[in-house]
Length: 185
Image (cartoon, rainbow, N blue to C red; front, top):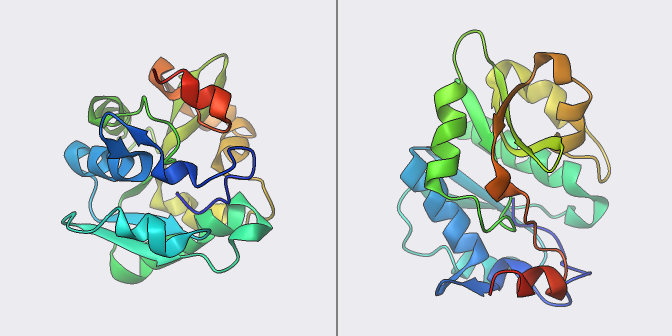
């Protein structure tokens, strides 16, 4: 997910350079390296600039959320809908472009925890449960019903009894402000 307007950041945070790559490119490459396929990146605000960061990444597709201003839920639904149109699936990995500590190793920990008995697997960090997370495809329709700025994180927290939590402290840093970006140094 890379569709937000970065209002608190002041410029497109998806394009913030960390370790010589934009956050959105790093996130897409992490998903690829973890074995997620296909990789669908939802763009919205600054869509042409953000999508340009993903050129020449094999297996990555972008989809534009024209309604990104309505909140996170519309971006989640846009990505899920596009994914369901092109591929059957067993499970869906949902991640954010603005969690720079989440790399392929972290994503592989989540993927390894998914099985027939564990159909909702989420990162645990800073005393909460959230994304990145993996949802069995039987949960996609429910996730697509979310509205407003309520995303997958709250959906997970509402169902903690069904969530397998994988400790992922690297997911704690979420870049929302320039002060958050300073922590990358």
